[in-house]
Length: 359
Ligand code: KG4
Ligand code: ZN
Image (cartoon, rainbow, N blue to C red; front, side, top):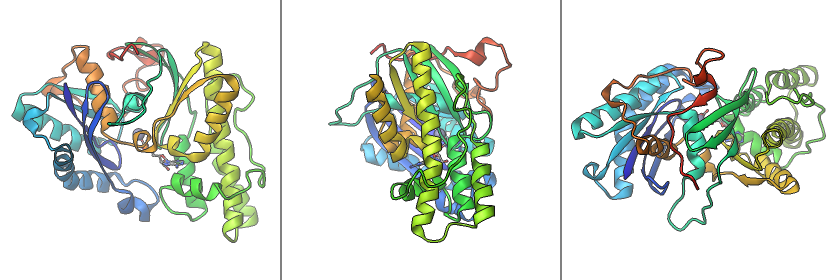
């Protein structure tokens, strides 16, 4: 089965063709970073308009890359939440139009489940190793930071999440404070590599608590107070030192809480994904600590960690294999159907419409 995936939940317009075993046949991502950079964050109305302009060229680009035709596609998967409603609508409407014209099955995919599934993506010639089930997964992106236990083929449980800012949001806000531009993650990542992480003492939120929650807004405030007191660091080395100190605290929280989840759940396998998983400091620290503790670590390549449509196509393939077909009535959700469900409801804890490989 070949699935066409479409992603437009935030500021990336993406389309991909993926075989139902996770082999990526084509993967096109059009980023709106330059469009939003002057505003220091994503402007929803501009994002929707840019998706409108980009969606057809991106879809055509994916088909060209694959050298296949729409007639050879077996099903369509599209992100239908969580995300910016106007942005989501563009991808969902495009998906519905193709499904209707071609009479194809159509499934909606939760963006976060898409990130979780990115670990199953592989390319021709890759030395790919899928994690065994169950595994613990950290999704750290611009909009979400949460831990999950992916326990069996159709059972994903959320273990904890951030109480306030997402990790990527903290990177973006701190970069803005330091005048580094948007998006902040990649810029702080680059500078932090040359900095001294011990140079500025910053608070370590929820460090000693045994729970699986994160908090990053106090850390961002501490950086703001440091800048208010001492001014923006002067020169590249001083900026790099502050970036390294900030990144070190975030990375430590993400890695230690993920490992704590592995210990508490007695699951010695960890997947780290989402845009922040592109961070070199995080990748290095996670590898080091996982090796120390004998945890089997899986971190997809950066292009699979940041927003893309291949992960959506594969997550869609899992739902299609389970017999799902949402059809042309597919709704759009601004909040996560998992996170947005009422406290205590079964949906809050579990997302049961998946069929993951037993590998
Ligand atoms: O998953 P993603 O592409 O989009 C969302 O679903 O949010 O994540 C984007 C976030 C942004 O906040 C960006 O600053 C962050 O991921 N990010 C990074 C790096 N690359 C992207 N954060 C830290 N280090 C990076 N190298
Ligand atoms: Zn994302």
